[in-house]
Structure formats: structure tokens, C-alpha cells
Image (cartoon, rainbow, N blue to C red):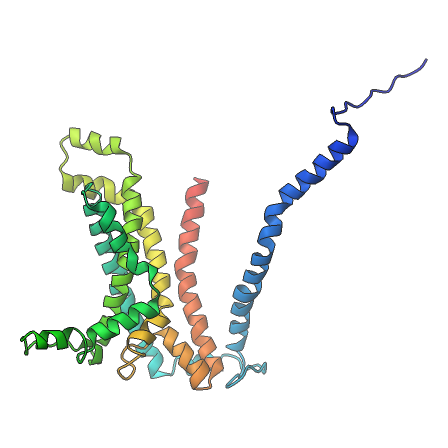
Amino acid sequence: MTTIEPVPALSPQGAPQRQGRTFADGVRNALPKIVLAPSFAVILVFVYGFILWTVYLSFTTSRILPVYKWGGFDAYFRLWSQPNWYVAMQNLAIFGVLYIGICIILGLGIAILMDQRIRAEGLLRPIFLYPMALSFVVTGTAWKWFLNPGLGLENTMHNLGWTSFKFDWLVNPKMAIYTVVIAGVWQASGFVMAMFLAGLRGIDGEIIKAAQIDGASTVSIYRRIIIPLLRPVFLSAFIVLAHMAIKSYDLVIALTGGGPGNATELPSTFMYSYTFTRNQMNVGSASAVMMLMGITAIIVPYLYSELRERKQ
């Protein structure tokens, strides 16, 4: 008895076309990986590789140039014995709290006003957003000129006849850190406004209408409905601003240069000065590791909450 083998179905174009289509599909599937591979390799080497290198340098005896002689925790003991490091940490606390708090309050307030469908929204929105397009260097330089007692606001007021006007925060050691807060808030509050405005526009209008029908006042609607619904935006704004506060080296250098004295020194300026000007690279690396731990302490809980919400 003869067995008839089943004949595999052929496409109208035949086997060669099917193989070509399979190769094309493979290339198409691999194309995103091929495109992303160089950037992934660069990030892997120049971000995470240098992070690991910096961590290792903090445990060495490196001074002017990197050396790989093991020094243990000596750099960390020397770091936490430096009075300048405590000044930098205190300034970061003042700057971070005021910068994040004012940006969120101001950004939320402007976003609520913009959400009232005002006629000039199209004009006001780019005006508020424009400072974010500037670098910290440009922002710091512009505010340095504006707050300079001999060139900016104080001098202008004197020329206008208000000779008793005084605003010397830029050269006052007790107030200089607040000039950094002013410049930082000016740049970032528009960006925070845009985040809150997008969040407000994403809230379901039916919820608001139902609350209005139930007789809830506008204040109650914002306090009990809208603000709680904006919790993810609050969290995102906090993460972004905290990250910018910790790494705001260029703003301080352009505005005050870290002075007067060390009145506006932050961990970022401390790290640069000890690594590249004071020839204590291991101490500078240890301060960079401390900054990394601060950012990690902010990012990890955020990622954990995001992943937890997705699982739920």
C-alpha cells in the first residue's frame, strides 16, 4: 500500500519568496535593537561605568590623578570631617526645600489659573515655559546682572530717585543662598505649571460636574477631588525638582561662584573643588557617592511605588 505524503502548502510566490519574507521579518524585528544598541552601549559605559569607577576611586588614595591603591574608608572619614561639607549640606537643605516647595506651589497656582480657560492662555503658556528653555548658566548669569547692587535692580532704583532702596542679597553671606532659590524658581516653575496643567486637563469632567450638582463649592472640589487626583503629578514634579536641586552646579557657579566665601556652596560645587582644584580626588569622589546615594534614596521609592501600582 502506497502512502501519500502531505504536500506543504506553498504561497503563490513559492519557497524563495517565503525565505526572503522571513529574512525581512527578522531584520524588521531586529531593527529597533540595532538602532538602540549603540546608545545603550554608550550609556552603559559612560554613565554606569563611570559611576562604578567613581565609587572605586572613593576607596583609593587618589589625589591629583587617579591611582588604584586601596585606601579603605579614609576618604569618607575625611569628607565628614570637613566643615565645608556640612555647610554644603545645610545649603542644599535650604535650597532644596524652598526650591521644590515654591516651584510646586507656584506651578500649581498658575496651572489652576490657566485652567480657567482664559483668553490669553496661548500667549501666557509659552511665556511661563520659556525660562525652562534656558540653561542654568544663562539663568545664573542673567540673575547675577539683575541682582548686582552696582548694575541691576538696586542701581536702577537709585537712578529713579529711590536712594534708600537696598537689595544686596547677592553679596550678603546670610542671604546669598536665597538668590539661588529665586533664580531656580524662576526657571523651573513654568515647567511645573505645564505638568500640573496637563494633569488638570486629564481629569474627567464628569466627576467635577457630579460634584457641582451635589452642591460642592469650588474650594471643596479642588481640595477633595482635584488635588488628590493630581498625586502622580506631585510625585513626578518632586522627583524632577529634587534631581535638579542636587545637581545644580552650573546655576551656583554662574550666579555666585559658590560665594561670598562659601555661603552658597552645595555638594556639587564641593565635589568639583575637591576633585579638580584641591587635588583630593578621593574625597571629591566620596562626596559624589554621597550625592548618588541621595538621588537613589529619592528614585528607588518612586520606582517601587510605580511598579506596585502597575501590579495592582
